[in-house]
Length: 481
Image (cartoon, rainbow, N blue to C red; front, top):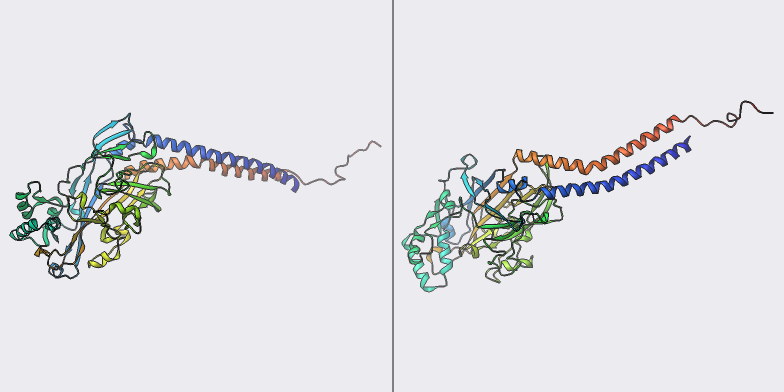
């Protein structure tokens, strides 16, 4: 009996192995079919869900601003360490539809502008827009830095600063600092230089406006080109930096990504806020509203200094003037204002900048930029873009307004632009992911079913056969003799 069972078992095992082999082949076929369908659907063209979501993103986007209020301005003027207190968030709902959408080159490219409108959300803010903030006098500092080497203009600027009672620090409301106010000092300069605007604001002229026309690839020819930016403001590259590599426009605008993302990929993004392209790498698996996602984050190398990342040499402006790790001098694209960008609280920056200002408390969970992306569809499920605006200040002897201040990268405010997929959109993504899981796992279900059938068949065949007969029992009942 044992020998017979083994015979049946061997036969069934051969069948099971055959089923497994066929299932493995089918799994690759099914996966390829799934990926082909996804590539067809995730294209920027009329009639696709991807185009609808790209043109008018349904999930709510929020922009939160956190200001650093200076608590010891007199001491700072005497050369002491600044102390700041974080105040925020001041939250705005952000609306960012694509407008003036136009397809070209047989549907392989699409151009559009992306105006952003900000609406204040009092219930999500620590106070009203009328809250007062004491911070660095950016218009005055900018003028002093621009004309510090011009003897004639420095005398004029110094006289104007005194006549308008300008100091190194100023106090304005949140609304004024963000959206603009008429500055007496700029108004005085405007008489001499009419091209200079009399208004100043960190986001002045940036509410209900766009930052220029973009040209995107639709993904029609290659799924990896989905929503990739190829032109901005009529140019295919930037002109601010000193190397071709640093002037490249790479990746998407960070609102969309191509489907079928792997953990080994480097995702590139172009940010007009930073005046450059950056990239992010896989960090870990996460789940957003029950949907699987890969978390991508910009590594420290993105803003590392020349020693740690030689590829960043082109971001040293003027050429050779390189900052320490964690900082980016964007004065070249901010009308000469001494603006330096970083992560909030100088996260991932040189420890010196954290120690220079009392009140800096960098924490990964609060100050890191993150992107949670569903790898099958490339849909952004959750994200937080976090950037800090800083001003370079120093003692300039020709200007008494600088007193004995230390040379500092002074934090002004930071923003957290965040989005989480809405429930209605999440249902659609979950449905796609579930169907994908079923399709990909059908072959493995067949493997399990084949093994189960094999085991049951073997057991049944062994149980149905009786015990082996003895030699005498196999003798005939009647003999012929």
